[in-house]
Image 1 (cartoon, rainbow, N blue to C red):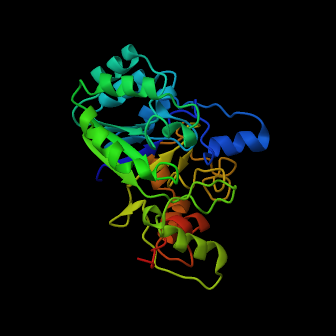
Image 2 (image 1 turned 90 degrees about the vertical axis):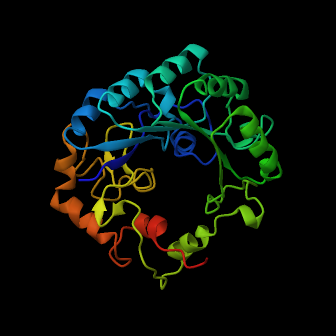
Image 3 (image 1 turned 90 degrees about the horizontal axis):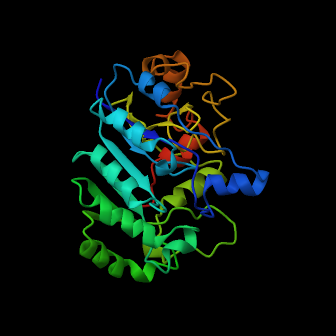
Amino acid sequence: MADITWHIEPTSKCILECPLCDRTWFYKKFKKRELHEIDIDHLLNFFEGIPYQINFCGNNGDPIYHSNFHELCSRLKQTGCKISITTNGSKKSTAWWEKLGSILTTTDEITFSLDGLEDTNKIYRINSDWKSIMNGFNTIKKYSIKTVWKFIVFRYNQHQIEEAQKLSKELGFDEFRLEKSDRWLEEQGLNLKPAEEFVDNFNIHQLNVLKNKNYKTKMSPGCLINDLPVHQLYIDAEGNFYPCCWMGTYRYKFKSIFSPKKLNFNIKNYLVNDVLSNNDVKKFFQSTKNYESAHDCCKLQCGVNNNG
């Protein structure tokens, strides 16, 4: 089997309060925090005998706030896997970043999510701290680890794109990655939508899925490569398995066979082969290839956009 790429949320902890984050929504609705951290022993055992690559990024939390993140990365690196980390990068010390730099290698990558410059990044990424982010980057760039500045375009930062790209080069980032906005199905009165040239028109497909009962399209399941479930399979901070991170959001996590209240494919009790060889799981992945049989989440995220 080819390497499986995994999208893993090590922790549900984060210091930010991004308005459209699942974590923010949960707190506003229930006035409490669900704090979970992935068990390192369970994770390593789950992967036993299967080659893999890791993408640390969360639906709710930021990877770097896992209590034992250095140990987690170190033990994974001892198995030879590649690691990519997506983080806001705030509030970690120079010593913390130095230790992480000593663990990671040239095959690894850190993406700093910076939506604008010092004056605008904090507008959406509430509580982010520019000074500590820059200190973290300046520390980690001394190591042979690829660094990326990921810039999501919002109405308030679209005028800063060229300046941010220039700054990224001056600072020494290896890549500046511009992402068009795709969060406009939300109706929360937020004036975040940028000019149309910066809007991902995939939202047209998603609106059709949600509102047009006669709408149909082809499917391009993001979890499958050559019909095998090997791409960006998701494990949340509780250790629960889902086909992708979208299925692990509050909107869908209890509405499929992967619900923690149903079969509960948790890494505490299963190995990779146990999950992927399960007949119900096989049927699910098969269903994603056809619009009529696909789960609602799959239709929304993996239906083919026919609008350019």
